[in-house]
Amino acid sequence: MTSARGVHGVEWLAAAAPDPRACKRAWDEGDGVALLAAGRFWDVLSVPDRLGLLALEMLWQPALPVPGPTLVDTAAHRVGFFLPPDPGGGWVGAGLRHASRGSWVAVPPPYRPTRSLEWLVPPDGTGSLHRPAALESALRLANGTLTVLPSLP
Image (cartoon, rainbow, N blue to C red; front, top):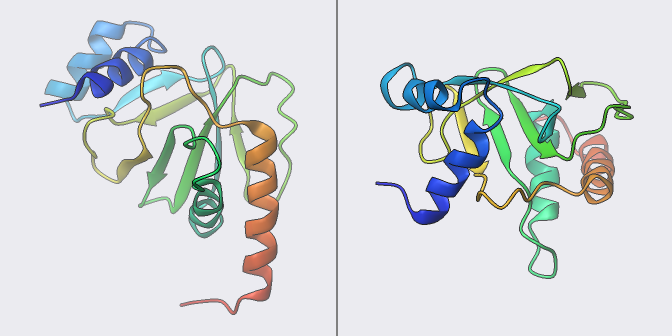
């Protein structure tokens, strides 16, 4: 059973689908994944998982707002940060992928993982997203940290 917060997250995410009802049916009756259009309500910045997990940890601080929706794809070893739409897409860096208008993103429902996709921070339905400046700063710090750490197997 989903909480009220989860229900609002479902509605918010499904609104990005061409047919929100079909999207919710795919989550409940299909394979549990829906393709949603980026660029209207949000963009997604996908980064390598080591970088993304460390950056998310840096963003998850008591003095800061709760981070925005964040998705992990364990098969692709990627973390996706949901940001405000940015048609200019000024995100540049090794391994960074910016999904904006014209892109589609595979997402599970906010109330359960599906296949290799899982929400680290599910959408709460308020439209809250990662702040680009805070995310950029966390990614820079995480990248610097990973540069000095020995590679793990």
